[in-house]
Length: 513
Image (cartoon, rainbow, N blue to C red):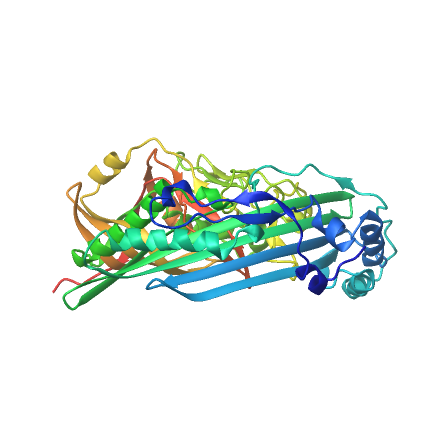
């Protein structure tokens, strides 16, 4: 039986799971609420919409009827919800469903792509004919049966986000607001942003694989505004993961609130540092944004295949000191950037891009891997069924080095520590970057002496990688809700770094009078 989206949205099924209020809220005067969960089948596309293996085979045959080197069908059904709490009032609430299938056929350098949100056979066949129009070769024998691969277990959930109501989320948001306001009388405004998603995909490939994946996502952000006299400062913190409702524990929320408050209040004491060329210490965790943007993108294979990346002829060559190892690893459980399978149906895992200072590998999707004569690294990603995949990062980080944070600070005579970031710009090909540092510290004579704020750091990613002279043993992934944009597509990612010393960067601070 095939169920159209409108009909599906109107159905209500009896459930078997119960969502309960986190225990730490029981003393806050908030009444515990429950919600019945709709039982979700292992493969909703087949069970809800009647897309069985014969249907998939029929569409794949049409898609490859004029020839194909590779081809795939990418089915997606996702529910996304968001809430904004300001001054104790919900100022914005959104809920949406995205559903459809993307059909891709690749022949040589050409890619044919079409999509439809209508999962009926006639609509899918029409889309397949559109995508296949790029080809003029002979028919490829498409598989008539597919091999279902084992469902991954990196991010399982007891109750999907689609079945957690506003009545469960709102008390948690109010708890965050109350805790933040109680930290200091200078805090005059708190805003809490909630987002969750329940995404299910099914990928069928020309070589006969059938992959299903259930991808949950959750993110909470708290923004704090404080006033002292005529001066106002703002700071924030957020946490995100492929997690479920119970993940929002008292301890985890308290750490987030404390970070937001501390980052806000320290700005009343902070000043801009001196401008000029100087050593820069990148703090562990959030500084991974520089690694991701200024270096990681340059190691995605499509940029190298086209010759636009500075790394395009550097495989096997030294790009950093021997204590620098850079990894992209999708199989870290429950991380925001984690994936059981990439969006081409390949098992996602660990790719060492730089090992002991030597460039070892790019991040490959199937197209680039074939052109390089290599195996795909499980790095083909797409924003949704409306887009073709391309090489993307997942969880990107630098591994521990031989030094300590204390040793790094002690080695700097005059420089800064960069701690939190609000935005930046990167020229991916050359790697030139500018990042805006919201919070940081001044280092003088080997000691941390004063907080700083509102700093621009300017440099070149490959050059900065070469200029890393010390790497500490405190590597960690940042828990924030990072989202990567590339060629008009956005995907969730994770990133991290140990405390790192870059011997020289341009710091946009204050000029001496």
